Image (cartoon, rainbow, N blue to C red; front, side, top):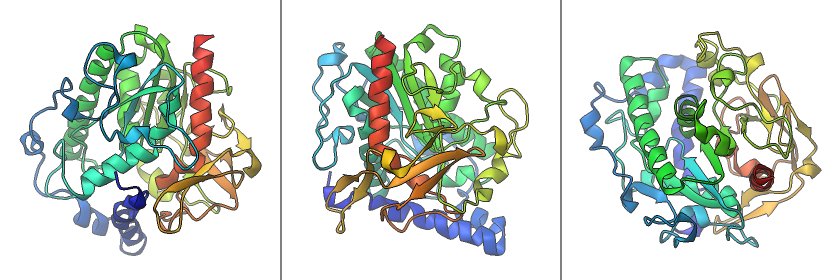
Length: 378
């Protein structure tokens, strides 16, 4: 992977989002819908056949394909094994980590992306694994499946086509999780996702983990960049919110905003939807676990941040900047404080730092996962 383009993928990824969001403010939602909604109706065949997760080509990252998962060699060019300047990516834990990447398919020609899309989509997908899943590499070995992700436009409206696209993507993720469990049949598990990946992870918790024996193996679930209602959703997920930094078997979730925060673009759909229990979702009920404290509704000063992932001036690599970004949970949002480093000009309208949900707290997430993995063993 070309290191000089680290985080550069954000430019292409957010141009459409930012332009669309400003269009909503100025001309209404119809502009965004018309420009980003996939053409025609959902057709499962358009994205190609279902992935075979016995094949290495169906994974962005995985330890290998024989049954001794702990001792497998890493996949060549595995982006999850990346580390910033001055850190090693060697694993010291024995957890199995299942990571689901966010939306990287911005085309409008179909509702779901093929399993492998050459060019910008593939580059963006691998860079997300590099900049997010890498936070977990000291805790164990990482599996990151390819899946026929729903196109960006599937999140902009409620329709049968959009729901079928999301369902198709989820079926791939669930199938990958089944293979993951086959290859890692014992020991601790860490689950992680972002945005669309977090949406699928939330559903995976509800349908495949809650009330099942595997729930006892969960170290933590990082459901990041997607809202969870503590009253309408959380009781169905089988795990509680994390209320202590050294707690195992719990859920972390946050959405990062600078101040003054305007989450209207995020909350409009959320507050007009029913949760898994059929109850209305409200902003005041959104789960916020501060990654700096590891606790629900926590607060931390900037000096408590052990490292924000920041690219250098020419994007040739990235380094950790300590003690600059604080955060506190307020009304369901994670509000930032301090001197936020120049991560790039890609903050979304409303001071939404969605793109940087992991980068802002990269070292804290790394420390948190290791601490919870050790707690699980105790």
